[in-house]
Image 1 (cartoon, rainbow, N blue to C red):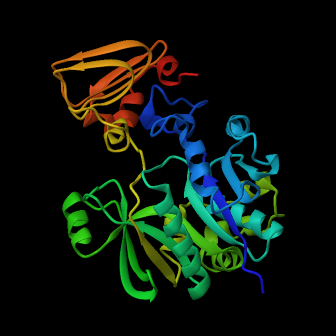
Image 2 (image 1 turned 45 degrees about the vertical axis):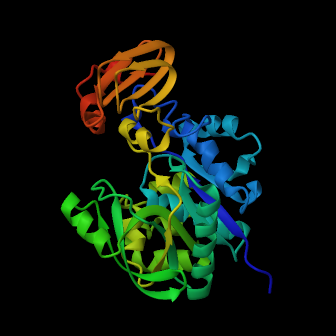
Amino acid sequence: MPTPSVWGVILAGGGGTRFWPLSTPSTPKQFLPLATGQPLLRDAVERLLPIIPIERLLILTSAALRERVQALLPELPAANVLTEPQPAGTAAALTFAAREIAARDAEATMVSVHADWAVRDPARFRASVLAAVAAARATGALATVGIVAARPDPGLGYIVPGATEHAPARRVLRFEEKPERERAAALIAQGALWNSGIFVWDVRRFLDLVARITPELATALTTAVGDAPAFFAAVQTPISIDVGVMERAPHVVVVPGDFGWDDVGTWASLRRVRPLDAAGNALHGDVSAIASAGNVVHAAYGSVVLYGVDDLVVVQTDGVTLVTTAERSLELKTMLSSLRPALRDLP
């Protein structure tokens, strides 16, 4: 019997408001060169291409972003850009993608990733993904890749692993979503891994499981395959894949991964993924940082000069300049709610 094909799904529909003012509704962060010299979505595609051919890659995005995706990835078959008419949670999005794959290749194994990550070592990333594919096929479980934690980060979810099932995979004992920092440190001390959002499963087993354990999608599952408006309109309650499927599934395994993963969630996170100067500044564009350390500066137009300041975030775009601290940059969503709509909702 031939080995089942591996298909990839890249979730690329988010708005990325934490990267305002560079990120806008028409150009969210997955289309921005935040980690390398090219957009995050292009990085995500190129990380997978050595193990998944372009004809087996699906991009799941919003209807408003379809043209942006096709312009960025002209080599991707048009039928491989799937669109959500409205957000309905990642459980619905990935179930819709799994149905599409199953209709094209009933024996397929599906790998799901996000478009807005940075990965320092793509080769080790691919090795971990392939280990998860092997574990999912050998055990019949849903599989995930858990990241070896670099710090007790309260903004991330955690996976507590148990006994080894198919080395290096281990059975998942439980998930913990965004614990307090002290709790996160205790979990790491016990061997917990970050929940990366990398998921792997046999599409038929996954769809059978969703039908049994995710009632929020029961009506959607009765719609015709490929009918996105009907499917997403029929979702009873939007729910994440973590809560709606992974935490309820009776059998989940995790493969530890250590490849310099970062979810690139805030401007301050760019100090972890961009090259730094001798003073620890992450600089993009024409920037002079004098007697200044630990700053993040993105100069899209003109020049920026820093003198005698530390731990700032400065973002210069055409018409808007944001200045905040690295710590307060985590609060951009709150800040945006205070701005007048014409400034907040940049085109």
